[in-house]
Image 1 (cartoon, helix red, strand yellow):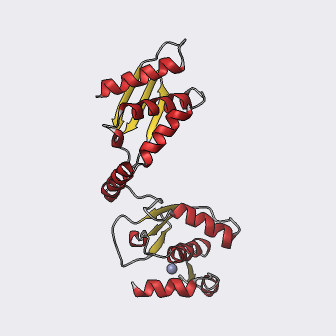
Image 2 (tube, helix red, strand yellow):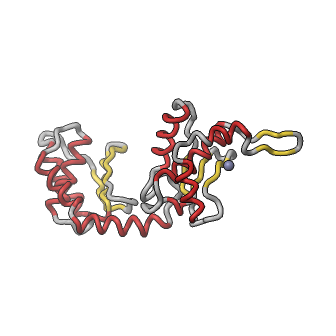
Length: 228
Ligand SMILES: [Zn+2]
């Protein structure tokens, strides 16, 4: 099968660049977390990776992918028919169901990341940064926690400069304002570092608390979180 895939790419290459010799080419199906296809040139060799979700896809789909990737690589216009065929196939119910299942399965062992199934913490951070901090806070590493820990909603980890939010909240049933509130609270920790008052650590200072009250959906978010 891998040889056949390379053959499709070679054919496509000849159509796209009839006067150039076909470079050495390696094409393989590759396990991405999602439907993804990549092409790159390394030391004169073309390296192609096609999502293994497309293994077994009809030839016309693979030919469309070959055309799209090579056209991108060589900055040629992408043929509209190929683009349409590819898009139709990817968005077909069969494929989106397959992709969804795989995402769920692979998601479990995935490394920490800002992009969850429902919410993207990087996006939430940047929105809050603009709304409440004039865009002035430097974004730390944003990640969903690895395990389904309920004991902590979220925390700021200064050692790794990371805001970690419990993955429990990466769920369509969780209102966005609740996730925003958790992130907002941790952003205040970024802005107001822990201070010592005598021998006592002051984590949520008066300024911290005053600023927390500025969050518009505070009541709604807290009510939701209390019910959990
Ligand atoms: Zn806190």
